[in-house]
Length: 258
Length: 356
Image (cartoon, rainbow over all chains, first blue to last red; front, side):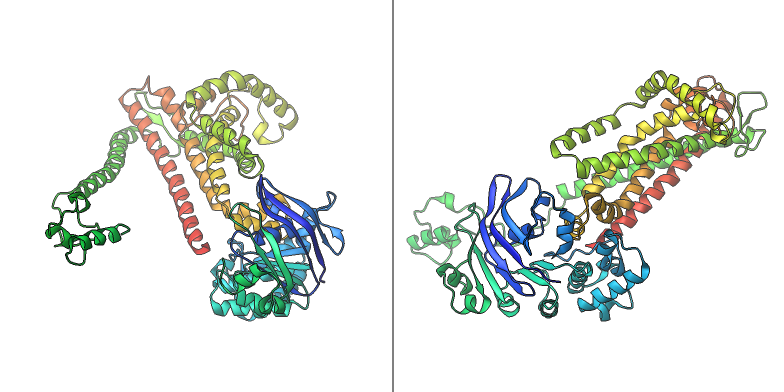
């Protein structure tokens, strides 16, 4: 249920602009990896490269090699939709489908994959919503619009929608940046719970959050605007926050930079 | 606010009080240009409110413009009703259920039924033909075409909307008449068991021809409004679908179409409004026969607006009144369609607010 991700020398472009340069890192199964760094340093670009969402944007392209359990996801013969099913994604702003009910949102991914049987969908909706710690709050109003929930609930609904298709990896792009501290805590609790089943990579601007939830931390940075982002240091979270090797990392986590 | 420090520097040089404005009364040698108006944020006594300002002038203008719309609407309604009532009173048949149109006789006999039927039938058939194509074009422009193709193509669609209807009518009659006649004969040969395609001919100047021309005319409206709606689909909803492993078409079905549905319905209603009111293109293409028949390929068919254009020239006073009465019916039909479209657009707005 969880797979290892290996990036080697991943370089992503938007048109002629090089957004990240030569990122190499290995993410172990069933772990939480946090990506931190100043705005515009390419954390999100790298994250979106992992499930091939980067190429959705116009003129975006990528070089290098990204494998998931030794399968190259950028192999020309690979079905991109299969990659995205395998590597789910939660976005910065909660984005439930506005025209769908809570139930329909939770099973949207399954429906896309052709699951039609009511009993299967019912079970999947319940287990995904339970895994996302949302079931108790919504079980009596599954037919209400998903957009009517609070921000934190919407984000948990999006997580439920993502894990309902049983991916191997869950990518989270600043999942708590639009949420209040209580909702943030709920999502962090959820991440600990999901760690048993999925490989999780989270981009965050909140360093306490990175320190709280992650096993490993990667610090991205840029020299100046217009330069590509690079991975400066990647190590155990404990080490990054207590005794980083690089001066830049230390400056950033102590607040002297960015 | 950025220039405060330099002012107090000057004040200090003059050896006076604390702020720049005090420095002026002290009459130091600093150039007067540095002390003009007080800052916009205030200072000094509060000025009086202007009694006659641009503000009230614009308000008056916009109120007058708004009121003018009501005046025009009421004037049209009064005109239509005042001319129509005498003619309807002179009618020797029931205006709403009689099918043919002889208002100029000594004993006027006319009714709206066949005309109303033809109006609605041509419009509905036109929409059935136009809407799927329009949605296809709109989706192509908003989600499939590369930008350098979508922009000129969208421009061409808007240009098509600006072509005068008489041009469409002439073109339709001269270009489409023969192909439609042959196609109608073919339909009649193989499908005459369907009432739509029955009859013994002659074929050609039929409901079908009028509907095809109408379809081409409403196509650009429905296309460009639908394209607008599709383009407004929030990118994050499209990405949500893609990230779940949707193909492009699945993404469109999951996020774009449900989001755009109310807007598309409104676009279709506006297209229907145009089709219902279309005059000259139908006057040129329909067979001008007063009958109610499900047959769409035989020469025949008529619509309210086309009949007004065809018959007004030879009409006497009662005849004109009768035509105006038919115009009143058309006014009512289009009003209903427009209100329905407005209601749907309104519902969409509420829906958007809750989604945001």
